[in-house]
Image (cartoon, rainbow, N blue to C red; front, side, top):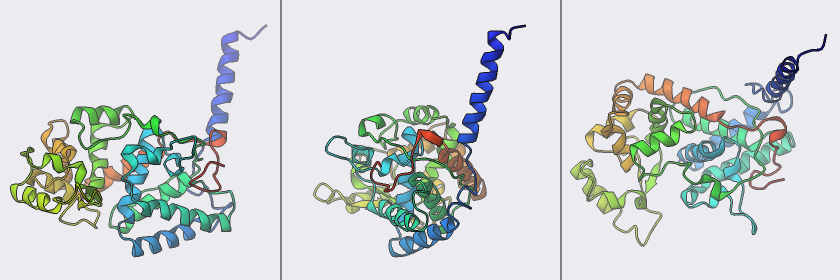
Length: 320
């Protein structure tokens, strides 16, 4: 008897799914045979860079978000623009990304290319570097599954509406994260990245006078710190003024006291959908660490390219 067409379709589908699964299987020891020195090279490069440039950790965390959230963790943020293409890193929202994490990725890639040519992807380098730097500043350790491939394209226009802006309402932010599959609680946990790093005055200066959520003395200090920003756009302030170089839960403790920096920070404490999670993480650092680690692990495999859908770039800033 003939096999019914539906059965053939099911068999083909199963074969296709299995092939896809084999091709896309990430693992913790992905480079154990092809690049045994991967972990040591990464650790050495990261430690040296963070010691000489202590703002690298916060920069890498931001770079990682800006790579992963819009179109998946594929290293497309690292590609330089050409005469024919304006790349993601030159989109307006990315112009304030600091140079140190880009430099770190270039250094790690150069060392890895010498040890194991054409083996380690730029997107894997960025994912591991981010995790290791968070851990170096006292944050939680989480497993990073490896085997991502790099994107062949990077386009500034592809980012439209896919990255959070400090001026967005809480509903806009919740919708933005949920469109990428993240819950409200995961969004609040990921916002804890603001426990390190800084924001440029231009991102919040216009709110200081008319936002009643600021602690009055803090608002006064911010006005002074940012008074010269129209002439000096590089002026910036730490996101967490209490422990700016330590990964902890003080960011959440600051919000009820009016010590949040950005409009979106105040929004987290002011909105009934997000406030309970802010209070939870302010009370319980272990819970914050646990949820941040889980959300970062989920983000690190979001929209990844595997198998033939991507490539291993020889240089992280250029398509092969």
